[in-house]
Length: 216
Image 1: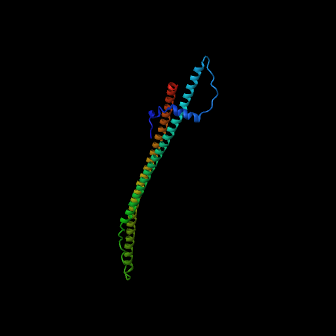
Image 2: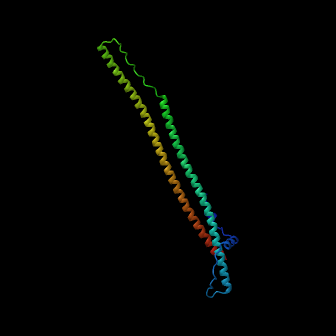
Image 3: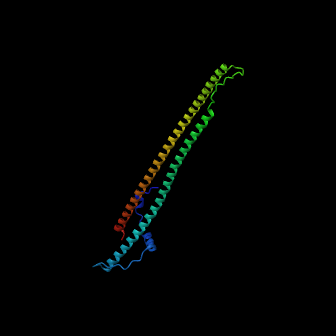
C-alpha cells in the first residue's frame, strides 16, 4: 500500500493536538521573560509556543501511526510476494521432476527385449570336429547376443542420462531465476522503504513549517 505525500500533509488538528499534548506532556519550568517583553507579549508568546509544541507532538504522533501502518502493509505485501516467488519455483521443480519420472517410466515400459539368437543344439553323437565347429558357432552367438544386450542397455542409459542432464539444467535455471527474483524483490522493498522514510521526513518538515507559520 502506497500513501502519497499529500495524504500525509495537513494532519494538524488544534483540538486533537491539545488533547494529545495534555495526555503526553512533560512538565516544564517557568518560561523566562525576554528582555523588553510586556506581560501581554509574554503571554502571547507562551501561548503560541504551547500551541506549536502541541501541534508538533500531535503531528509527529499521527505521522508515526501512518508510517507504522504503511510499514506493516509493506511487510505483508513483501511476504506475499516472496511466498509467490518461492511457490512458483517449487511448482516448476515439481513439474520438471514429474516430467523426468514420466519419461523414465515410459522408457522402461516401451523398452523391447533384445531378440537373442538361439544357440545351436549339438547332437550327442557329433564327432569331435563337428562338435568343435558348433561350439565355435555358439561362442560367436553368445558374444553377438551379449553385444546386442550391451548396445541396447547403453542406448537406454544414454537416453536416461540425457533426460536427467536436461532436468538438472532446468532445475539449475529455476534456482537461478528464484535467486534473482528474490534479490530483485528485496531490492525493490528496500527502495520502497527508503522512499517511505524520505516521504515521512518531508511530510514532518512540511507540517512543522506550517505549524510555525500559521499556529498562533
